[in-house]
Image (cartoon, rainbow, N blue to C red; front, side, top):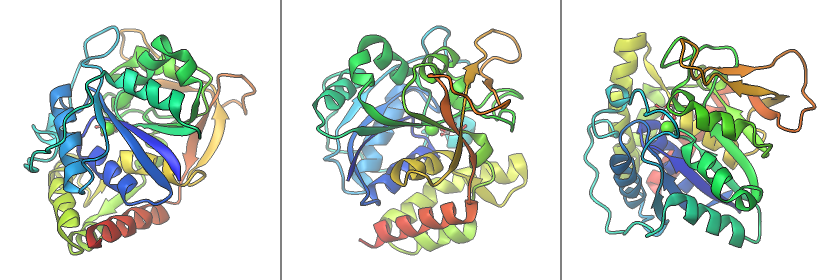
Length: 312
Ligand code: BDR
Ligand code: CA
């Protein structure tokens, strides 16, 4: 089983991504680190604890990370998308588990240095914690087996501004640091997440399978309502769950090695990922950019796994 760390800002699709990891025998979720993002850090941390507790997995350690972005305060949160609590207005029971009494970046470095096998890190919130790891513990960062990032966009524009995807927009300087680090990185951006839509029928399947599934469906209701009013769609884009699928089953997504730089200026392009599509890059800091996806298969994978988790 692949040792896995999820760095997250729950967040509705983050919650789903964590549940997907717990439902997947290919990976061993060893640590959850939290970051500012969709809602403030105190809330993303509490939500992470509660989601693990919901699945009966309060044994997975949770460490709290960065409260804000590296250089400029995060310009905007996403409470209007994820509900004021971050979990679509659903009140999950509080977890009895205590937080790891060390900052996320320390807990992550310790795990990376002590793991006998390479660790996959899935970063599905703003990438501030990963940038801090690179700055403080570069030798630990070098031991990351695979870094799967949810964020950015090669050709689909942005979702928070015309140019920027939310996780990159929330900390562009961190994103630039992470994308230029030369780590074995897959960038799972809007190009593959936007076409991957979980519809009401899929949600109904895991909702009917048991308590965890029904709760996940309740959390998703807010997201569905938002999608309906904002985009007129009858399904939801569960960005982070698709990134987790790539972390769990490497090669799920079709990727191409490309140079990516982040617009860190303060103008209208701030937070845009500039993906060099002129050719396959031989540069040592290029990353694998996810460009193709079998969306129907990805949604079926997610629904099937959540159904099984709910039944267990
Ligand atoms: C990303 O932004 C957040 O709102 C989601 O949780 C996801 O990580 C999508 O742009
Ligand atoms: Ca997220």
